[in-house]
Length: 392
Image (cartoon, rainbow, N blue to C red; front, top):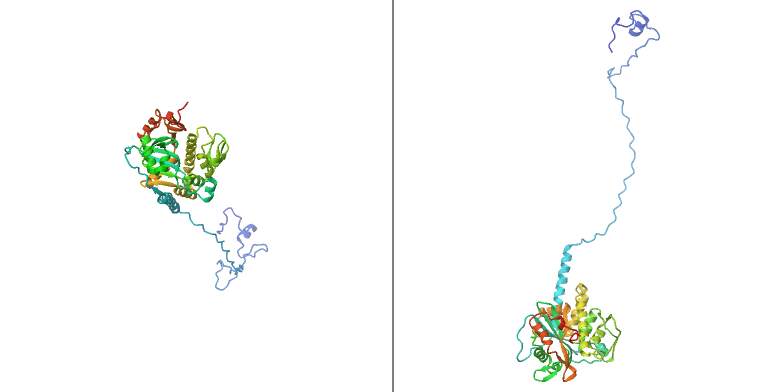
């Protein structure tokens, strides 16, 4: 620090303040004068050097030994869902849907249904002749006992239906079994007699002679086709309008809509002794059963449930006969037509003049129905009635 020169606003030289501040030269210092502490000289050290104190070593804290980290619990790895599995399942499902009908077709009995002699020319659309016979050899012993029938080979027919498919709505026209018609080579007979006299070929010829409709394919259904098919579907709904107690058909049911099994459905479609119009009313009930079967068969559950689909196809294959010319595609079209929406009619008819217990085709109304089917036109609603009788 530089000293302030004397006389420049400081104390005068010689005064005590001057001596206290600047020190006295050559005079003794007073006792209370500030003295400079002499620095002690250390070897190797400069007087004004800043000294660094030696660092004391710090004690290192003891750390406990490291413990191993717990292993994470092993989790089960779920397999990744792959889209390929879905495609494979869909492929297998499609193969199953297609393969089962082909398998069934290969196991169906084939019959010769080609008639001899002159026939109507080919016509637009496809016409199937459906015959419900008393074929019972496909029934189990328990079913034959319940129905009171033996293992007959199908000598009679209760159902005769012409199914037409074409450009418009499908049409199912029933021909009552008591219809008097010309049976080629046998004169005028009830039309169902043609089946017992000459089986499928003679029945086809008789239907073509009566209607002028060319029959393309023949399908014969036995008792088991109704029983086993209904049971494969888990039952169907029928709606009788009156109580029905028919011991001959083994039928006893109350009126109103109800779920029934195969045996009851067959008895319901065969009963003919509890109504005024007998066979005509039975034809209407047969159409009701066929419609109920179709509604159940085309349910999405039939195609989503492989067990139901298999049982239905297997039951149908065991109780059906087809003509030798019907391939799997034609059979598939037939199945679709039977389960689809169609117009259901009975051939327009009237009591036979020669026998009130027999019927004949109505000469005024029946030809119009036949012509509509032949030309692949829609059958007029006024002519399409459940019993075939004129609307009152």
